[in-house]
Structure formats: structure tokens, C-alpha cells
Image (cartoon, rainbow, N blue to C red):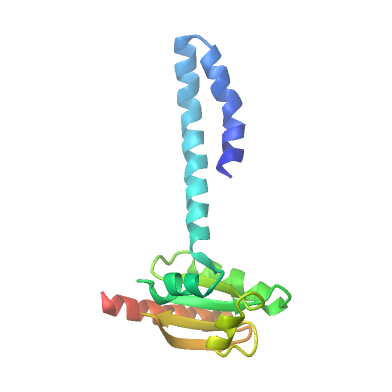
Length: 162
């Protein structure tokens, strides 16, 4: 996205360089806020993407979930699962303003060992981890209030810990 934003500004910057010194300086001063805004938007969106941890194997699970300093909500899902396609974006949306809780997404088709370890029998299956231990869970598509309750519960425990 930064590249796209930069492509829109780049021709104007080139034009700035080909102008006289005074005119180039004033043009660049007008364009600089646009460049800063595009960069800020990109960084904001990339931070949102960082909240979603994609787990590819047991090693990554240990590193990103079990050893995490933050509580982690683990979403076992499948590409073919329609409720999963609704639940994951909803959880990302509800976690958008939360820096203290992460979301890990695990594809059940490619992580059979984790499915077996946590006895996942249906998808979506959501487990909440704190300090490497499952502290809560639910199976199936639930309403936003249930997800918010889980998030609030993890936040309260995290704040008590600090």
C-alpha cells in the first residue's frame, strides 16, 4: 500500500526536482504532508495485520502462543468453513484497538498435530491462552457479545497481572 501511495506522489516529487529551487521547495512542502499521511495509513494498517499470527507448525505455535507475553486467542479454522470466514474477520475487528491480546489462526487441514493435541473436533474452535495455558474456549460461530466477553476477560486478567 505504501508503494501505491508513493506511486501517486512520486511523479509530483520528480516534477519538484525539475523546477527551480524556490518553486521546488514550495511544491515539496505541499506534497510532504500527503506523503506523511500515506505512510501513517500504511503503518496503521500493517500494525493491524500484525495482530493476526498465522501458525504453520508446532514450533511456531510454541514460539508465538505458548511463549507469548500477551494472552493469545487461537482460532482453529478451515478454508472451506463458512462460519470460519465470518468469525476470523469479526475477531480481528474486535481486537483492532487492543495491543495486549493477539490472534493466532491455525488451518486445521495443515496442522493435524495441533488439532490432535488440542482435541479439536469441529471448526471454528477458539481457545484462549494465557501463559501457555488454555483459560477459555468456545466452538462454533458465536455472537459478537460472546467474543467481546472473552476479550474483556483476557484484558482484565492481563491488567491484574501488571
